[in-house]
Length: 403
Image 1 (tube, rainbow, N blue to C red):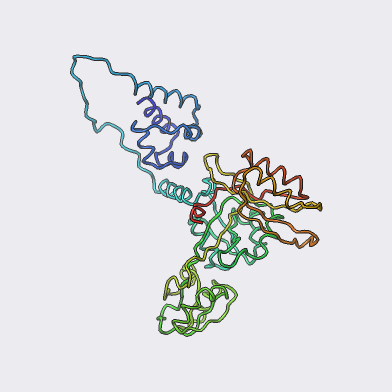
Image 2 (tube, helix red, strand yellow):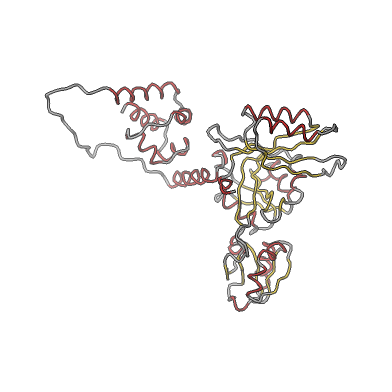
């Protein structure tokens, strides 16, 4: 029990509850409970995290753990004396109970673990997105950062600028980069290479269309549905079955706003559940999309590059490059990935606004530049490119396991 007692003493000395300690070392609170009861000992790869959280030397932890190992293998001396057992008394310390704030932080950390987002993003104060309140980008922000403020911007350029300038404490940007049905989002590839921001995470949002009406409306009252042309196309069969005509609107959140302003119970919007909450509309029917495989992928962007910890084994590296003007440059710069066994998940070309004479490329690979094979492949790529930049290294979303 030497290690269990040592761990408990050092945790209390550091002023941490079991919940706060669990959050710091990225484990569950029951796991910490078992460590301190002596039921389990931590895996070796957790010791550096424990050392950092408790501000104790790593060697001290290892010494204490070795003491536990000796106790497990040494047989107790034989004695004819009867064994004396003691019952716990009420004077023993009670289990730590987390404060509401600590519990909230723990739950947020657990969600970050599920989303594969870096714990360094837990303290985010404000996240910017393009569009109106109630847009699907707004939904993505709320899914990932439910306690952060949101900032709606009129353009992607304004979103990136707000984070670059740290305007009004805007910490991150939530940017849609591609959709499973409509491909890449227009102009994003033009903006990312010249931005000073880094991709620090990704999120796959299932697009769930709702039919939203005024508070006094019923389904049979509806005659017209307004929304973005893509949303109307994705709900065509459902709207036809309800004999509802379709009218285009610039965006889904704007359509919801328009329905709220008109107050006409014969007019509905095709928009998100968040839009219903924002504009006080009634959800008349849920999930009206004709196909349930509509997914939008977002990237989370920060002014600071935050690489995933070493224990994260599935990582994505996003990069941009422009080719040198030499024969077979693309073939040669990608050859390093093939010879080093690095999987290219995405390769898209585009023509920059500022230089239409040559194509540039947005690329996503599996792996981390600190891995030797990725490092070697990146070196070969740089030799055949006139310009290249790593846009971010981040943990692969768990959603990719289903792709």
